[in-house]
Length: 421
Image (cartoon, rainbow, N blue to C red; front, side, top):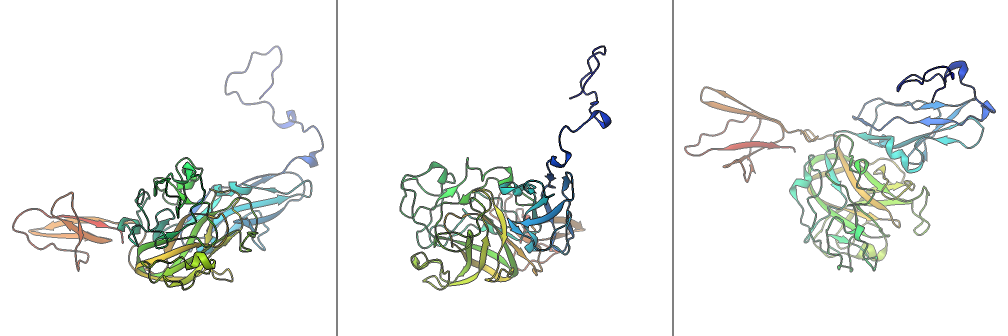
């Protein structure tokens, strides 16, 4: 928008506006100019980094500030700029800055579910569990889902055993086509059907597919849940201590679920001792997530306010009953259970970070080959695999360490590759 004298020619496209300086006048009470809060975009940090969030705030008068994380007040964080030193998993989440000048209502940047756009992720994820990828055919799992390079979709079409791999009530009576977009089950399977959101649902967009430093191929979530329902997940974990972040959602921003009395978002992570035994005791008795026929040991809680909307996640660390981030010991093939402890909570994914693993766990696998005379040397990171043909099948090379010298072969070829731990 600009202006010109009647005697002047029309300005050309791209001509700078004249509505600047003394030519720009506010008509009305300047104290009523509305506040604006423009948040920065999402960031990915490494454990131990210093992270700074510096929104742009404009408006008249003396402005005061209050920061929020996952819809909860950050006590004592009342400056425009938020600086997080020695950032860790507890700092992962969705952030908002609220500004007030005493005129009208306070203004919050990226209010409600829009705080998904001002999120902090932590890099170097060791394991990603997509909520729709629960066990199938009695505690079976897909090995590729244990790799840091996993990008989803491996469990599409597979059928799980009710009360062994999962336990759900089977509602709605009339199947919602959106609930079965991942095609884990037939729409006719009303009894004990796990309800999966995806396909055309809002959870499957560029933001929903984002995991921080990478994106999954397509995104789905478990939805329409009720208290006591659960899924089991078997994965192969590098030995170490882990901290976990869950991506969960619930409509609105309430603090407490009125039906259960638990937090609006409330889910329990447990370790499973006997994952092949039928077990509906947790569903029948309420979400205690201890004991039962499958021998559960509770590891912690994902507790939070409503996230602003279904299919709009908040990133919630696994904590103890006092809200402290917990570290859990995992080693090798392990079955975990996610139990819903409130009504209608959606679970999307869980990120596992090993804080003391000594082997590479960030998805990086490298390999190089050198030949000196008649000797071949293979230098690599990850796990070395070999096959007789380039198409495989590949198997781990037992006892191999880097650098590796292949034994001589009298006939044929050998092909080598490496996979992430």
